[in-house]
Image (cartoon, rainbow, N blue to C red; front, side, top):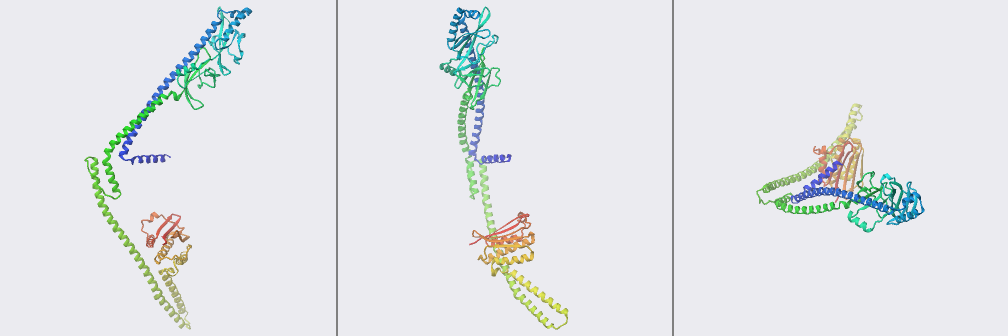
Amino acid sequence: MGLNVFHSQKRSWGSFQILSLQKGLPLVISLLLIGVVIFFSLVSYLSIRKLVLQDNKQRLSGLTLQVADMLSESIHDDFKSTGRLFAGSSLPAFIKSGDERAKKSAIDVIGQISKGGSSVFAEILDTNYHSLLIAGDPAYLPSERHYHNDHDNILAGPLYSFHDSVFYSIIIPVIESGRLLGYVSRYRFVRVTSKMLAQFSKLAGQGAKLYVGNKDDSFYTDLVRPVHYRLPVADHGANSDYSYVDNRGTKLIGAFRYVPDTPWVVSLEFPYKIVVQGASRFLFWMILLGLVVVVCGLLVTWIISRNLIRPLNQLTKAVDKLSSGEFAEVPVTRNNEVGKLARSFNEMSVHLRDARNKMEEKINEAENLNIQLRKLTAHLQDVRDEERKRIAREMHDELGQLLTGFKMDIQLLKNQLAGSNNERVAEYIQSMTGIVDDAVRFVRRLSSQLREGPLEDLGLVSAIKWYIEGFTKRFNIPVTFNSVLENFGLPQHVRTGLFRICQESLTNIARHAHATKVDINIDIINKTLLLTVKDNGWGFKIDDHKNTGTLGLLGMKERALMIGANFSLKSEIGKGTVVEVMMPMG
């Protein structure tokens, strides 16, 4: 994997290097400018975002503190106003004696408390929180009422809901001459108007959400109705700020404060994207300004590079012409490094022109010599074949006749000595007869080999079959021969060339291959004659034989070239060798 990454980077760098200077220089400058703009934009954005977050967290803490103080102040006002309602009344007397006259007065007072403002219920309690007198609808009471001790400095009870409205309780002690006689409990619902919410949104900002709830996370409200909310702080034993991602994937930041003298907590939250909106807007304008700077820098760099690189473009065009074989000179208009390079190029162009002319002359001479050599080789091969045929005819005619006459003389001598009792002479005559027969067979076989066997009379396929029979008997190597056609109608020199290639292949197999099986195939595929000789011998490395000048391989290649065929050789150690000759038909 690391190697692949290295090659990928190398290819990318190579692609960059092939750019011209006129394109590469503005590209480098633009990349540097883009890098500087991105760097300073990110640094500025991160710094401003950090400052904005710190400022907003401080602002959130201040707002939650203000809301908490406002709620605490409201509870204190309710506490004082309720105390003023029954101050100087007969409530202490009613709690102490339960007198009917005092009770009537207490009923009037508690009725005023239960109906005042947003109150829905009021009651008088003794010191053990037993109800003595009630006023209002008890349906608004919570299922479990909460009372507190005198020393816990809690003026209000927990928040709760009824019919989608939010309620809370206030308990005011009834004291006479420094002695606690009982309590007055007042239940009120939270009344927040749309005007108050609009003022709060204007004060807090767009997207702000305010939650008020109990410290034990049992209930929360947005001061309009109950809401499903939990303070996202595992341990909120102290006032703090926080950040989290809600179940809809929105990142929020917030702060919470405890409301003094109540069991309540206030939480104020903002969407993170609104908080950092100013920093994001700053980043946008920084990037836009950076793009303008990059475009201007790119334009200036392109104009400068165009004037500097114009002479190099002329030199590049001349080099392109030189690579395509056209020799051109570059006008020298400057004495700087570019001018020196142009003069050196002109000198090199002259030397290359002279060298190319000389090389073309040498190539033409070599091609002519090669053609003449090939013609000479073909002529020598024809002369050799004709000489072999002449020798074969003379051996068959002259030597064959001599041996036949000699055999007839021996037969006459044998007939003359038929009545002789000299057994030794008879044995010599018999031996001489056998030797003459062997000599006649040898002359016939040698003459047949020199005359290419039945190639001239029966055709290529029959000649190869005839040679395979002798090869198998002589070397004991089985040869399988397959040919879909019997007569190809080939010219004599083509038949001779294919036969000799097949003959030389079998000779090499017998000498070097150590093969136990040979397959020979002749077929015509797509108007191309294909001769294949394949063995299962030891094989060899073709690269080791390319420059050794092996005469057998060279002879087969030359024969293939002389008949207009392509010669190929395939071999591997331990996998045998395959010789293929492909010759177009027609």
